[in-house]
Image 1 (tube, rainbow, N blue to C red):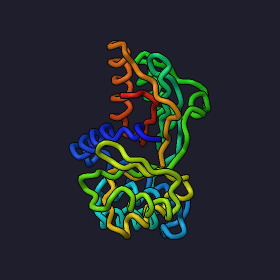
Image 2: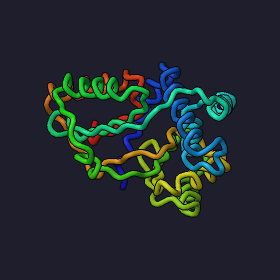
Image 3: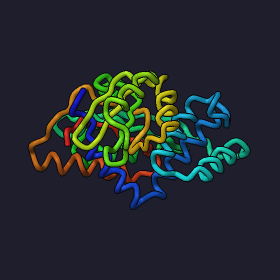
Length: 242
């Protein structure tokens, strides 16, 4: 497992998020609203909401903002109805891309996502065309600089809590869980005051693909930037080895 956590990328993304916290908080706010509507306002009885709260905390969303979002979603019968939509496709050189969106207008979102692929010399594919290349896993990244616990103790703590795998990178630790075990592992780390740089259920590529052609890199970055700017897009997964 070692070597695939891409912590530098996560750090880079977090820096970008720090510069655009409004965007990430909006994304998580939508996820909270949908989770509450689907399973109720109590994270103890709503696994999906518990996962979103973990993601919110890892992105430094204040607790009162999280609580307000839950209360608003629970009490607002006239809230916008968002639908989950997933798109799959290919970037340059066959790079696999999965796009998760929450939208109140599927036609608008589909057009925008298709446009992002096209402008980056990629193409939308059929449902399932690339998702088989990814595994759905809980992933928790811990920055070594922020962690006082030693690697062996942290590994035992995580594995005893139900983690499937633990790896040590140059500047981080990565904990992998099955999706159903994510919440239990997260809670144990939180109880032990372990600061988490990233904590979410995500899609992890089984293999990464390198791009050596500068034009291909430029094209792929164009697609990823356009998707990142789209308010409906919640998450983008790809197997590009950056």
